[in-house]
Image (cartoon, rainbow, N blue to C red; front, side):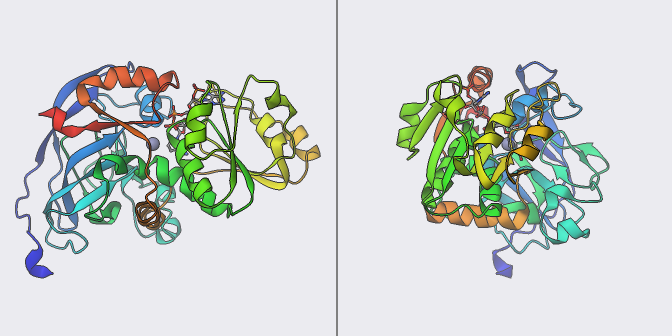
Length: 363
Ligand code: NDP
Ligand code: ZN
């Protein structure tokens, strides 16, 4: 293996280019910047494809905490290894690799040791963009709408040669964020389950639960009944329909991916006894849905919990499972010059599930 490694000798910073938002509006401009050098345990990845997640829309606006501009969003990344540090063993030059929402963490605290690095108790999780990188002099990380990325090999994921490279990127966030709670709640064959918000995350949740043999329902504002049918979803319900208000004690599991204000108590009521509601949608503070504790207490022993992406080892497990079973997102590939148009569609719930930027369009 040793002779396959191309050691990257230079300590020089890496030049990169991408599209950045310079303020809280969804406006992008080309931006040249430097990434930190390739350390002994780091890999340099040429980015081939990057997905657009609704979190990118929130983050630019400062809805998920303070926004640092110029900001290059993007935490659904698929690319090719172009250089490796001297101690890297997991990858060699030419391999495909994926990057998700994190690029580093302390690795030593209890949660990191359990591979839940997104919750590093030392507060040292470095998210892929808009995050302070304590391991590199506090620089602010920049994401995947760009030519390349440098990160610790531990946070880069292995992708096989036969992967559908143009479709795989959204698994790195939409995939793991839904796979993780579906596993945690042990969704299984024959259960009645539902997805609230049939967008990028929601359609991945549906695909996983259909694959597990559950009977899947889905809720959305717009009429997505045709798309739902193609995904193997049995029942599609518009949230302003009569039917919506008649549903109670129906589901073993519901996953909510809704990014705006909504009536969370309505979904709680739809759970059966001991049913579970997993919240992954992350609205802004102003839009935060309010739980009615009183109604919860009178309404069976149902469980509600939240979930944030997934750790490194579960992300690799999800990738291996998805690729082996041919579970990929529905994607529309766009050139980077169409970012602003794509953002408007995502905000309106009109995206064809996931936009993926073809990074060839950068040059
Ligand atoms: P999308 O925009 O792709 O999907 C959201 C879907 O919700 C759309 O189909 C939208 O369509 C629908 N929707 C909006 N309002 C309602 C409503 N009131 N009732 C039912 N459906 C509704 O977003 P993503 O899937 O990319 O992301 C979803 C959320 O998840 C975001 O808030 C994002 O930040 C968060 N997220 C959380 C993560 C975590 O780790 N917990 C990780 C990644 C993302 P329409 O407007 O037509 O109804
Ligand atoms: Zn995301």
